[in-house]
Structure formats: structure tokens, C-alpha cells
Length: 356
Image (cartoon, rainbow, N blue to C red; front, top):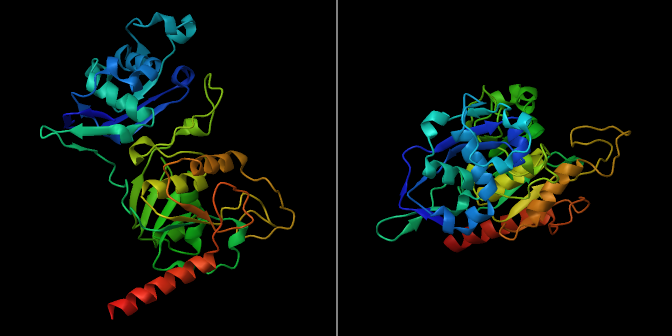
């Protein structure tokens, strides 16, 4: 746990980007509306910051030594710079002016924690000796409520989505054309344009990645950052990051809507979570609303598939069930959707009977 006596008046929204940033940090820094802790943890004595010392030093340098994206101060850590060309390469900083930063340790420490995907460890420790965590407004919003995620695999051909009425549902991309789930999820920046007409009549909730949210909708829209370093290599990265954030403040894990929708359900507090249409293979097409006998690839969306598998291996996630027995995913136990819905109906009928 990393804590301080009070919350900052202004949350942290900051982007540090560019080729040099990706090369040095193996990622770009994107933190949005994240908690700032005032007067907190002592960096030199905290194991977290010992582990992330180089990362913190470089973030500090990008904010302290650059003005309008151009270096104007010498590096306090010359050992990190072996190339004079890299040393003078410009960067892009949005959300905070480096002049205003001026070595603000509270901002730096809080920023580094969020950028490392550990924002869930930040707590306020008040004068009465009580600790509490400042969460994103969506964190655990539906704690303990079963969530059904509707993806787009061919296993859903012929499925009547109305059977999910009354359930908490998350739909991905083209699902909006056939059903209005409780929550729509987009990370593909073109999907909301493709389905613009259907979205105009949708009045639920939308949780989307940057630039993926529709402009014309009656829905309640939340834009959440993505951890690009969890599915794309850049700079001198040799492998993608395996950090799975435990707060919406720290970004969504993985590539593809299947992975980010699952991470969304986990962070919303869903328990248990049921996966529908999570196939990761073709069966005369890729999606439930198409049929093409030439499309029968057995290993589909490999990078996205690995992201979902990695989420399923986290020890802290709730029970997750795959409702397609033929799915390539192996990390989730199988539950028949007919039995799940029948069991829910029986439980509801029993509760009504007991109340009578």
C-alpha cells in the first residue's frame, strides 16, 4: 500500500509520448483523471519505487528538463543517455506544462504509480488513522452482480439475445445492431462510425477507449485509457507488459474488444462473469451475423486471444465462465448458457415464492 494524508485538489491527467519516450520507457505515458496523493510515501524507503527507480527518473526528466517538447536542461542522469541523437530528440507532453511541474514530488510519485498500473495501491491515510482509496467512479460499480459479456463469435448464430433481458450485459461492437445491452463497449476507433445509426437510439452506458466513443448518442459515455504496451511493442521493448490494472484510472489491458471488455467487467466488480461468443476461431465466417464458407481459420486473433488468457490467469479476478464449449480459450471453466439462465430463473421464482 502507498498512502498519504490527503488527496490532491486536482487529479492527474497527463500524456507523455513520442518515439524517444517509447524507447526509454517501453511505453507512452497516458494517465487520465487519476488520484494525486499529497505528502505521502517516502520514495527512498519504498520498495515499489526502488523497483521502478529508472522509470521514475526518466519520467521526472521528461517533465523537468523539457519545455514545449524540447530539452532545455541537461540530464540529471547522464548514464541513461548513450546517444547524443536520442538526447536531443523532441517529445510531446500534454495535460501539464513542465514549467508548472517544477519537480513537484507529489505529482511525480502519484503519476509513476498510475503509469505502472498500480493505482489501486494508492490510499489516503487521514488524521483519524483511517485509510480509504480514491477510486475511479466506475470501479466496482456493480460489485457482486453477474455480468454477461456478448462478443461476436459464430457460436452465437441463432441465439436470442432477448433471453438476457433483465441481466447486466456488456455488448461488443456489432452487437448494437441486434440488441441493446446494459453497456456497450468499443476500442476500435471505427466501430462507432460503422454502427452510428444503431447507436443513435441507444440510451444505456458506453465504456470506450480513446477516440472510440460515438458523438451522437443518448448514452452515458465514459472514455477509459488503454495500456498500449500490453499488446504492442515499441522502442527497445522485447516483450509486452503483463501488468493488469485494478482500477479504471490505470487503463484497460490487452488488444481487441474481447480482452478490454473482460477487463471492464472485472473492474466493474462483476461476479461471476459469463463469456458469450468468445470463440477465437472461424466457422464459415468470423461473426455471428455472417456466413462465408471460405472462412474457416482455426487460430484467430492470436494476440487478442493471448490477452484474454492472461486476464484469466490473474489470481484476484472473480469466477469467469466460458459459455462456448468449443472456444479456443482454455483458462475458463465451461458453463452452458441454457443452464445458467434456467438456474437464474429458478432462483428468482423461488425468491418470489418465499417472499409470498
